[in-house]
Image (cartoon, rainbow, N blue to C red):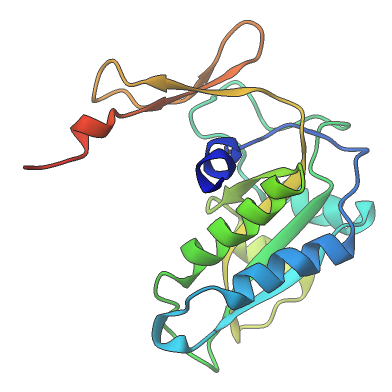
Length: 189
């Protein structure tokens, strides 16, 4: 059921690094993105895939892992993602990628969840550093990075208590809590 996939599609930041994701799996996830809607049907998104440790280690340092967790710099060795998808916008097709990246990410991550994986989308990236590291030319806008792996953490949804405090947090057992607004608070009559 789609609701179950969405409920299990959390932002995971710690993984079983030794559980590998194959290139074929990554290609299946990109196929889901390819089949998804695209603004103006321009289909301007392109992807760099990484599922080997050497390339993964080149991507990892350019990501900013958890803005609300000030005392945590990201997963330690052994808990890092086993794959990455670097999402690019091809400026030779269009300078405006509309909402395509959001639709593509959701499709990719739902496909990952269906296979027992999870992920984290990164908009907070040292873009210039990563573009240089991976040899990405100016033709491509680095839109975001998706980290993927077998989740090694529990993420639970809590009801927002204070509408001004939506920050996620971890308890003393490292369970990751994500406050969500109530359905009733989202509907305007």
